[in-house]
Length: 99
Image (spheres, rainbow, N blue to C red):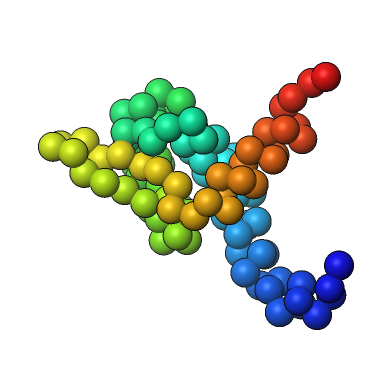
């Protein structure tokens, strides 16, 4: 492990980890692993008020972790950074899969 390289990227990694450290944002990201989701689908998976879901989704967008597309009156969320999906999948493997 190259500690100089880690030192150069520690701030970015810290910001990334802080963003996924919130259980609601983590659940939003987990909901997106298999498919893009509309706001309504996210609201079924992550039972938050519309306002809270909107705030968490906006934070994930601002961090560059998710992106949106509009179809008619629906907004769909998907990963905008493949690294986020890879980490969420790895976390699932480490914390949720039992052998």
